[in-house]
Amino acid sequence: MSGRFVRSVCTAAVVATAAFALPAPMAFASPKDPPDAPVSELLTQLQTLYQKAEEATETYNGTEEKLKTQRARVDKLNSELADVRVALANSRNDAGRLAREQYRGGTGALSPYVRFLLSRDPQEALDQGHQLKREAGRRAEMIKRLTGGEQQADQLATDALAALDVQETLAATQKKQRDTVKQRLDEVEKMLASLTGDQLAELQRLEQQDIGAAQDKLMASGSLGGASRAPSKDGQAAVAYAFKQLGKPYVWGATGPDSFDCSGLTSQAWAHAGDPIPRTSQEQWKSLPRVPLNQLRPGDLVVYFKGATHVAMYIGDGLVVQAPRPGAKVKVSPIAANPLLGAVRPDQGKEPVKGYKPPKLPAGASNGSDTGYGSAGAPKR
Image 1 (cartoon, rainbow, N blue to C red):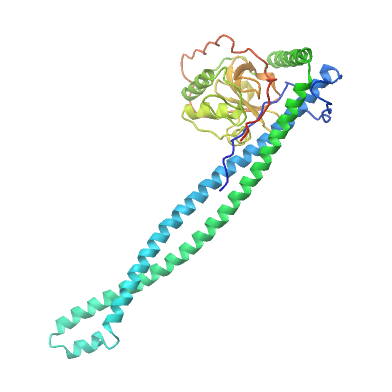
Image 2: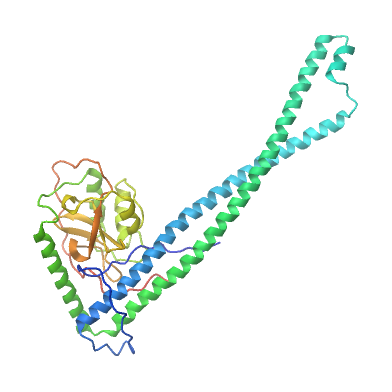
């Protein structure tokens, strides 16, 4: 059957500006020959590469979710088929026993009516007639059950084979998508390897400068509202879980406990809080209740990019906890570190806790790039 496939979610994208519609990245002669383009242009190219990797990852991730559902369906059908086959075998044994009893009884037996006329004891004849009638009913029911069991087994076998075909198709599709993700991330790796240390430092400086400007603009606009809000009890637990993961590395497709990708972090945080949510950023955006940015409270999920390909957890004061992307670690970032799409609330309708005190940020919680330059390699699975 199909092999294991790593679960995936999104790689975080890049800066708090509008969505990108950018030219294809440059081709590089060799990692030892860094491109001569301005660093600002290199940043644009790198952003484009990460966007492509992100889109490929989300496509893969959606297939992974479908594959898990299909595997469960195949297992369920196979289990039902096994049960029906056992019941059918028992019915066939009973039918065979009845056939042997009928054969031993011969064909010359008198009818219950004739037995009644010839019997010296009419009551005995009546009792025998009732027994024969019950036996005939039992045989009819046996035949009906046997026929129904055969039809059910045939249908389940057909359904199980069809479901298995779907599973194998999904698995093959997912393998191609996994290869695409690895290819996209290898392109990022190749570009990073082509840059000098000075170029990388300047890239990070420009990114953080853009993020700072976007954050200042967002906070000054009042879009987040002025009041500080308390989370629900479950939201508080989700935030606490996310804080415990600070400093753990981003790994493509990971859901903990030692590493995470973006929606692996958010889905696990809410699962540990007792409110399971969908695995992917796109499904979280699609299925969870929307909440206006000016109503955000800790525990809400902030979704980024037009395709909902990145997600973080709001912790208050314009900050989020996120797993940015390969090469980065789980960290606290400005909410405007990526282009905002909107926000959702997993615990809609639950009352906020009273006397809430936000957790203190651990030392170094905000250290590192919010977009995570570094090793971009996907798991070799």
